[in-house]
Image (cartoon, rainbow, N blue to C red):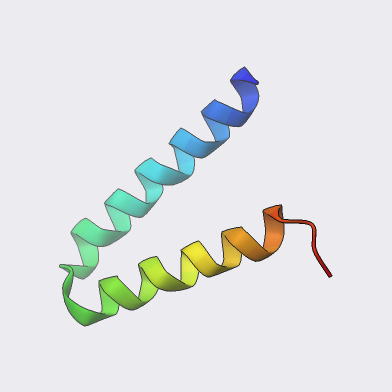
Length: 47
């Protein structure tokens, strides 16, 4: 479980860094929506 939390926090930090570089706006919102959709599809194990 600790590895899962570490993995999650690492990518959370990378996402925050990316948002800092991009400077938010509509592109940031689209990236967030895309990441949430992708994570749902990857971790739901439904096909």
